[in-house]
Length: 305
Ligand SMILES: [Zn+2]
Image: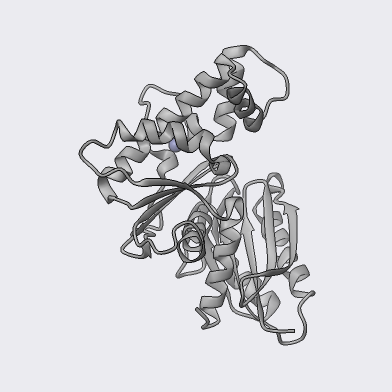
């Protein structure tokens, strides 16, 4: 068996892990509920358990390193997850904890920045040194790639486009502010708004809202347009500041392609008059970008790039 690494991406609801070879191909993969309701300790134990179960599938001495990508404020250099509201975390030295258990070096990455690394090296951003990577799903995340580098910022918090205020009189956000992009354009926000307009109490999902947009339903179209315009407002600010070549849309809801890209292109074009319009493209790895990026971080840690 050739050398391999373990790559894990931890989300608010699901954690995904894989054993990955030098060719980037996953030879084994596991997917488990994050179970964040049970608290920080339980989530950490589940991540370690997932990594151990993956390691058990690797032959003796073949596992050379690993990496875990998590959301929130992530200090990659120190290997510490400083805080993640959706995981209930504070200052968790997660990379060191897994490393101790597995006996191989482990890196820590930020989920969206790791995704941007994957898209830049292997996906839709290949060949581009300047792009924005935006993920839309349970939340709205962002990463800025400028001059070929993924920017973490001075406090590991760069790129938080989901908490850019686009409607100052809007709904209160989990972060305490009002009218953040995430309160309008995330999957839960779409569902909430659709229910508000229609009074529909049935089990509705963001995918179903989108399906009704395609069917020409007025309420669904209104909710989708509100989300697209809010996204265009936030992106216009980023485009004006960073002059990217591309905007890569990823995450579960962000990867839907033309139903998002087409209206967003029109809305953004109207808003970037003093800047150049970037190309809008769909992420190559969909919601697997964080996991693919974690594998790249692991290989980097092992001295293979
Ligand atoms: Zn917010």
